[in-house]
Image (cartoon, protein in one colour):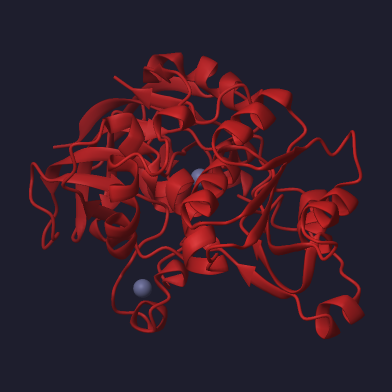
Length: 364
Ligand SMILES: [Zn+2]
Ligand SMILES: [Zn+2]
């Protein structure tokens, strides 16, 4: 039986969510219905809401959200998770069968970036789709079983809600992609949720110098509290020069972009030393391009790496990172913004849009 649920629905051309009733369709083969216990709000959904992700206008209305903890309440034919199973939801599926999954590159699974599936209908009969195929900004969602991962953890729901995007994207970028080693120097450009998880992961990995670049003072303060050894305001200093000063004149061993702008990508590249590793995690719009001098790119030894969701492998990374949250190796509580119910979606969006909180969470 289809179920009526409350959902934060994004309509074409609107810059606010409408919290309204959605008739969730039944799960099909290989799908489950998950009751959302808590979901983190991701800044990329503000980009999607304002229409900059390249989603065609006729894909709307949509339900966004891609990082959550919940409970399986219904199971379609052949779905592999039983009713009652506690699960984490992330944006990246793992089909286990495609070329990339078999090659150990789950982050590029052939089932990633599929056309948004229909998850239900509005009162007026219009179909509602789910870009990212996850739709966690709702009381319940219908989702492929390849995109939910059983979790046995006593950690608080709001912490677990951050795992599927912030934790995995930030810590994964440092551990899985950049492979930061003890004694390394690390530059993190942008101190939103991804950048702050990067700083924490770099500190946990034993990085000696961690330079954080951030325009907003409250974020710089948090970056320093969470492990940055140097915090730079790009409006008040020459970042490249300051990074060189902090790294024996060379530039950082690792430059990580978590700023999601052309400028932040350029900064991460330019302030990384020759032979260093540049890790890119975000995008501005699908059409955005960044230019680098070919000489620098081809002959100066910087290794530029792509970090889709921290090159995740959920089962491996839950084993890697959940204990770090559990044992306080990284500070999850400091990453939380306020926890608000779905009905307060307007305030949650404003908290994200104004960058007032590291990770606004929707629960209850
Ligand atoms: Zn996200
Ligand atoms: Zn796959």
